[in-house]
Image 1 (cartoon, one colour):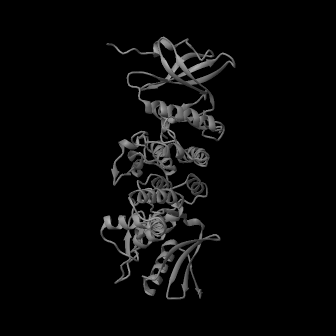
Image 2 (cartoon, one colour):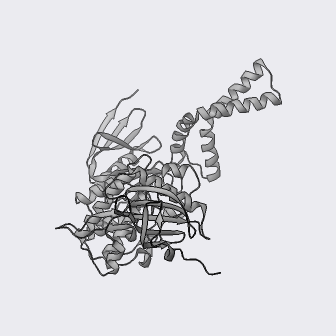
Image 3 (cartoon, helix red, strand yellow):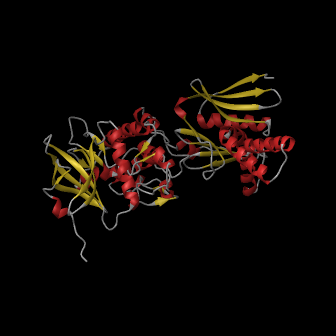
Length: 480
């Protein structure tokens, strides 16, 4: 049976007793986007229509409703404005409609296909505008993650004076909020070539939007879709085709690094580095040799794009399964304490039998739920005790975490290098030394361990001083 194309029947239809369809703007599986006229305000509007077609899935409706709810909560001049949402029930089509204001502008995709090219300054201007939008989205509570930033979802108005034009971010059909993520199963959405690697596993964080924006900007400076460019270790190789400065190339590389631990993590930091011209290159890491300390168990890895320092844990548990069991026991310590308390209580006053035993389990579970934060406080120091500490330094950031990229609760902490004032080496009593970096008045602990020798701590401080190009301050703290 021939599939019915509803598009040819929609022109002239009045939806929601108010909006008259004029023309089709775009379509994809189960969705149509129309330009329509609001008969009450006499203004053009955009109607996104989700239809109950043969390929309809409930996840589609869930995403569609989330898009409507998200747009309704947002108020930004560079984001489509929510106008209406209603059910459609016609003879030719049934589904739901989302109405938003019409923005008269072409997509970046349309400009590039028409042969337009962008200068480096124009691309930077577009990047700045989009990062401002992401700062707004990611600052919402909960943060709003677009998940599908690409040239066809970015509108650019005509040039105005010295400006490249006004930039808009559209199509929130793949949007995710933290609340939505925690409330159900993960849906893999996005566009190949622009999706961050973690999105293929159903995970999306604000840094995922940074990756997609970086991939979009790479398309602007090369004229090629990222999926058509070569890759090495999941990194997009584009510099040979980009006619921009090396510093800007390196900034784009940092946006599109496959590892979350190495990529720019926030839109505000990314924008600040761009606007302040803090676009360093990697020459220092390519030409300098940071050598490990002879006889030390601290590992130093000189990579092209970053320096990695791995500090072994105070307690080494080689068997991964045993390490996991030990962490679970640490987390469950409050539950075990409560369980033991009720066992002793029942043994003294009532006596232990099958009914009492199940009551004890019930009471223990009830109280352990209340004590979950305490369980985390017990787990946290134990986690640091058995996991290696990794320090990653590139031209812009220093990142510390525990374990590796696949470790749950790796406690990732990233600091922008430009705000680091100094490195402090503190000698405490009982032979414990501590290395910290200061960002303004804020102190970030790098290492405090009595399992490292004085020579190792001093060497590590000097290594960080050399890599970060910051002085070392020494102090003593005779704490009791």
